[in-house]
Length: 283
Image 1 (cartoon, rainbow, N blue to C red):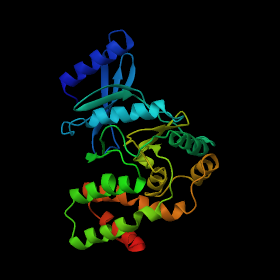
Image 2 (spheres, one colour):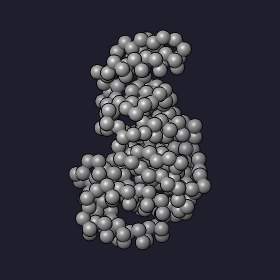
Image 3 (cartoon, one colour):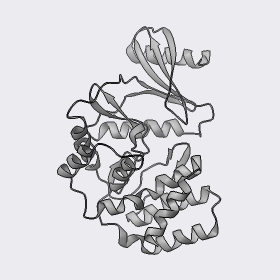
Image 4 (spheres, helix red, strand yellow):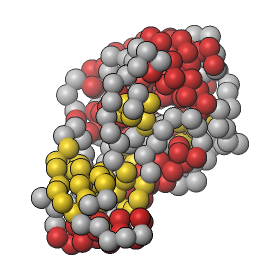
């Protein structure tokens, strides 16, 4: 299921990591990913998780590794340990699934608020990364509106073949966008926080598949609402720990223009109509 060369690399990497020789006993396909092939690697010394993509953009898995490590060092939510990566794969510890306990959502909300408490002098990141397989620019900017326009919306508009009327609507939005957001310090963000990008690890919220950067913290909140939303206890516990600015619920659609444009470029379909409906609210 995986090439012998990759299997041999995994054996050598894990053997070096744990200090003894390891045999690969089985490889099981893990379903759920839409960009990469994912596998559970069962060895003589435990289980590991492999993401593999022969067509991965250069540095995609390196960027994901850096994002996971950044989240792992800054926050109280669990993040899987990265063991190794190369251009076409990322090897991590295997996270055993579990059931949510009664405190899961409260712990998740409070934990995310602590991640967001990690701040920075500028919006952006010291390297570019990816959202899905699309490149995500992270050049540092002094203001959120400048970053949101030039590092988030404009690149996505450049990826697609959009009609001029659609682009002109965004130009109208850009003129007023600075007045639509409150002024806050940049927060460390997961960057792609939907229900498919967290796991339940022994009842603990566990973050995976990040697209990290320092940005406006409502971006994570809005993304969590995009496909049905999390349990209400998540939002109430977040607000108890780190109250969101007035009007945050009215800004959800505005924040979600970015992930929706990403979905237009990745998958097409009805996401284009959603973007147009949001634009009609604000311009």
